Length: 130
Image (cartoon, rainbow, N blue to C red):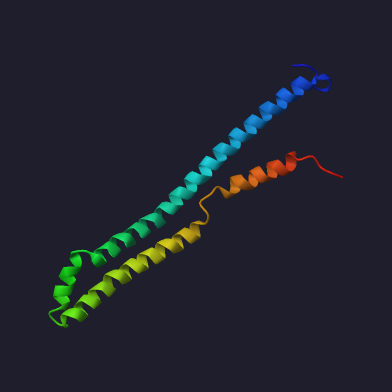
């Protein structure tokens, strides 16, 4: 390598290109890692929402018939059907609500730290006016 003070423009451009490529690769790796971490955290919320969807399906499914028949032994048939629907729908709503709260806790699913770092890199690379 030549003396740092006597480098040609081509050498400087080559060095800048190499450094930029390294920076971009590092930021992409960082973004991938951040997305993976967020996805792992969000998986619990997704499971809760999925569980809520299953219970919601049960509210309209054939297993509701068992509940209605059981309740029908002590309540009029229409009231028994209403109570069974409320029970399944309430369980579904609770699980979905808990899942959404978990997603809010996890925060945005995009790689915030990486985006902030890229913004800072762009800010630092801009020529200063003045």
